[in-house]
Length: 404
Image (cartoon, rainbow, N blue to C red):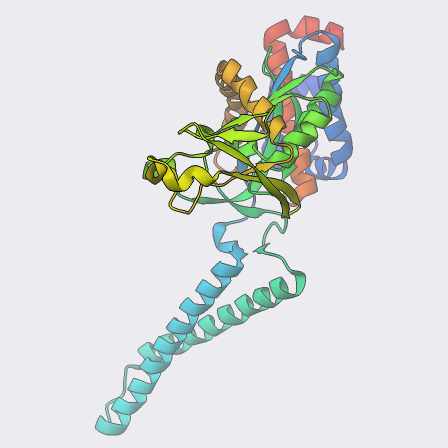
């Protein structure tokens, strides 16, 4: 239970809680203020419990699964705006204002030509609607000026740190936070978590892998994540930190959908620094350039013009392959997955359950607190409760108390 008012009721109703507190009965304001004012300490308690689990050998330090999930904030979709939504809403309001102005002009015209007036109630309703629409337009224009001056791409009125995030490929949005977690595979305990307001996972891999290694105090650790975490720079950062990762590579090319060969059909020969195409020709190195901060090597062959299967390969003069300078690291990551494809099943079995359990506890509304730092405190309490209940089920209360 996360509601301070609900906790206040339980303090006077739940006999176990009454005994645990020694008959203390704080009101909801005391509970809410304590949670708000002691965020760093509460988050530290969550970390210390993970250290306790490590000390009694409950954690599997060999591999962790990393995942992110969207949680709703205290902010309705109607109170969250992007630049595109602002323009759309202003356009809709302008159209409504124009419609009411036309209605008032028509009433004046009818009165001047026929001496018949429109019912007063109808006119008053139109005037009130017009005034309301103008107030809404002014409010939206103020938000638009705010985004222009601050450079923000999104504005949330109730919780300023919450952001609109897509939850599926069809883009239904949730206004909230993206919670990252790292879960060990032995007992499915959450060893590290982080609350972010980014709507994607691809910048979180190295951060979560390093956090998991630090919490588990183990140098030899492997991380597994889904394809949403596949970003070259993040994978390289993990490899440089000595953390091998397994992340499937997303298929972003449309070539296969059109019946043509894609990048995976071209084999790199490291000894020759060349690619072999499906027809057996060698694509040799040609030049190096830099795009978006990445050093890319380009390869192609002059044999494409006479190739019998060129139609299945490219619509251009020749098929060019570009190779990132750290492509070898990405190939090793893919090779790890090819050698043990069951790691993706292990990831799914490990990291999905904690999020599902915590969301079931939260109910439909998810977070109760506002702003990133307070939401991080609330999430730390949920993670602590999850780990605590799980360890109690594994060890039993007497053994857990003895370990403490």
